[in-house]
Length: 181
Image (cartoon, one colour):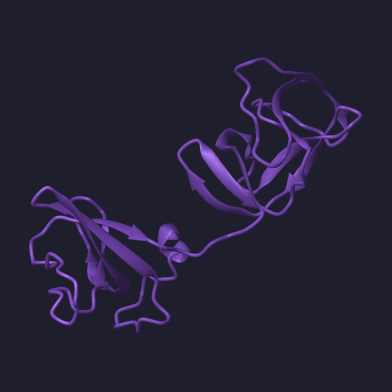
């Protein structure tokens, strides 16, 4: 359901969307040894969740799938052809990528200030994917965050930053590091 928000398709949407307001889709396939592509848009969501895979099916609509109105020769988009779909979702700016393990209580991180003191900070988590969390807001470029699993944290407590070659770096926010109380 979270992924649907990024392509602007509400889960409860059942009607057809018009081309102007729908997410763009490019369908690609290899046919007769050549790469083919067709441009379309997401028009609707199927009315059920697949009980085996727990997947939701989206329906892409391609105008003139058989290429009858085109002057150039193109392979028709035939029923049953397996394709890959590239779906263009909403773009989000000023996103910071951090290790998911750095999140505390779902929407907080521990920030280490210039005096090597630890503070809780509320952040806006816009997506979690695997071991990565994507944030918008709450962190500034150059700030350090704690990625160590600390049991008890009091705002203002002193820490020692320990960096090594295996420590991941945090996109747009300087560096991440293990901290020791």
